[in-house]
Amino acid sequence: MAGHLPDACPSFLTITVEMDTMTNLTVEMDTMTNLTVEMDTMTNLTVEMDTMTNLTVEMDTMTNLTVEMDTMTNLTVEMDFFLTQFSDNKQLQVFHGFLFLLIYLEALMGNLLIFILVTVDGCLHTPMYFFLKNLAFLDAGLISVTVPNLILNSFTHRSNISLPGCIFQVFLVVNFAGSELGILIAMSYDRYVAICHPLNYDVIMKKEICMQMVVTSWLLGSFFGVLHTAGTFSLSFCGSRKLPQFFCDVPSLLKISCSKKHVTTDVSVAIGALFGLFGFVCIGYSYGYIFQTVLRVHSLHGHSKAFYTCVPHLIVVITFLVTAVFVYLKPVSDSPHLVDFLASIFYSVMPPSLNPLIYSLRNKDIKAALWKFLWKLNH
Image (cartoon, rainbow, N blue to C red):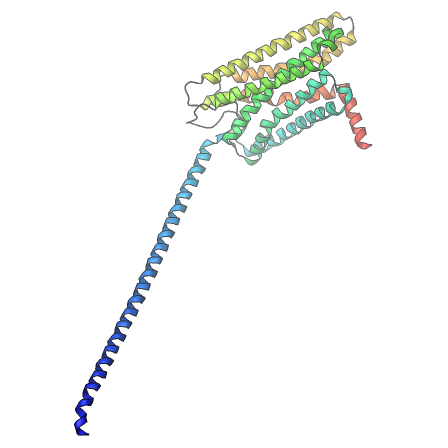
């Protein structure tokens, strides 16, 4: 037994060494595990840092978007124009709002009523009422371009108008006013032919001729609208954007423009003035011959009927032409006066308001058509 003990010691030592080796391996594995954990932790930190970086980029992007939106808002505000109110007193502004609301409703309903009656009543399908129908449509359009915005500004105590809204106003005001002048010339010529050449009336005032006259009037109005709008808004507006007027018109925009040369606008205004002068001469010539012809007739009833019909219309036409020329050719003052406002009202608000009264309350055919229309509605 004693002789075999030395052989057992090496085996025990070997087992001990192996156990130490396994222990070392276990320690190394633990170390590797810790390293792996540390690497995972570092990876997570890297991911978190990347996430934070992305969040920072997104925040910067949002900040840039906010700055751009603020810039666009400022540009929008800078592009607005500011109109002049009739009064700085808020109570008076509300009063003006109600006053112009009544005027607008009267003009709109009166002109639309004439348009509908002439359209539906076959007895009114004559050249005179065909021109009157177009005049009523133009009047409704002309007063609807400026007065509703004035009413809104009076009730809300605001005075700004956007750049597109201002462009829209200039184009439509010139378009409707130019077309209306063409229709007024056609109406005066129609009355001239009816009174001075009654036997040739049906031959001269044929349907095709009347249609050509109306189309020409609309095309001339559109031409002047495009010409004035393009010429005016090709200018620079770098100073004050407050217009000395209650709506956007060419003279007021020229006043606040910082462009030294505006040849296109001056030429368009000159052409418009010549067209107005031409219309004034044509209408004056027609009514001159009408009055001369009527005075030759030895009938007091005929005289009174002709003057009763023509004089109110002639007064409105002259007021429209004179005030429009006055507004466009008179130098615009820095601070608008009552005369400036009245002149603008006389050519943009008064004719659309008075024409329905002249052609409906004073016209037996329109009254008869109205009663017939109401009777059909009730039956």
